[in-house]
Picture 1 (cartoon, rainbow, N blue to C red):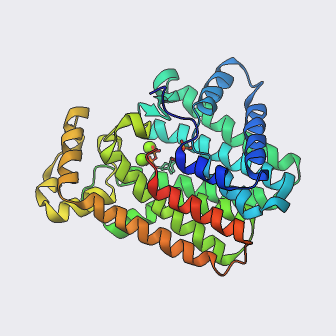
Picture 2: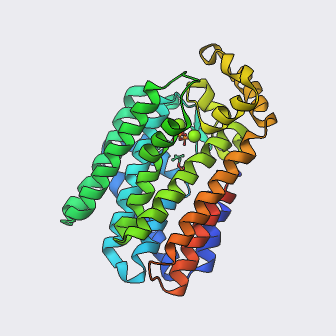
Length: 321
Ligand code: IPE
Ligand code: IPE
Ligand code: MG
Ligand code: MG
């Protein structure tokens, strides 16, 4: 697992294709993240630092910077740092809710330090995001991020409410994905630049991103995804791969998810894959990304800005982590 690169190929592809300002600003974001999480006591500092050091794709900050463009300067770097802090906070909290053992190729904070420390670490990360923006008097970004954070919490709670219910509808599933994932992508692009079509781009690629994440949960392998296979099934989260697979193999609906162990979950993953549902979900995600990319045409980016955003969108469907 240690062989996993901290910066996966879809991200390096964007950095390689960009002019020098983007990698430089991504480096600044990384440095700001380190500064924000230090000096908060031994326990919190340790858990926050390990979350940060484990890497992650840094997709949301990259979207802020790309949408803000080179002229976005310091305020874009600040907003990019803040959104990654919110994102990391939600991951640490999410792993408490999902009882997930592995994240970014390492044991989760919840697994190593327990629920209480994980909740506190998530709180720290969330607080630092808003403190950073407040210090700079950036009320617009505070408001945008606060709205996205509430949406995320609502999505996570809706998912808990639906836990172990194999009868949930596709519409309900998509609503949850919008709340818990697409909204933060929408927020990322809007932090960079306020534009209705760009928001639509963010919403679509964000939704595609969650659909694909749910596919990766079924396919694994952990060496590539950095997360355990079948985590969704084990915590009772019914996702589109299972919803569509059950239309083709109705016996899947009678499985008692509550009685599953990791080995049983692997078997259900294989059974979902055997129906061809994963290809259907991937195709749906690809359609969403294509639709999102079409929205960019109306935004008026320079050639490079649009090309790089398209690369990010394409990277989302080629990803394995
Ligand atoms: C994971 O997001 C949470 C989802 C919305 C599926 P990422 O896959 O962007 O997580 P990192 O930051 O790269 O680890
Ligand atoms: C997305 O859902 C979680 C958040 C938006 C915080 P998942 O539960 O599928 O994310 P992973 O798979 O744990 O990263
Ligand atoms: Mg999870
Ligand atoms: Mg997942």
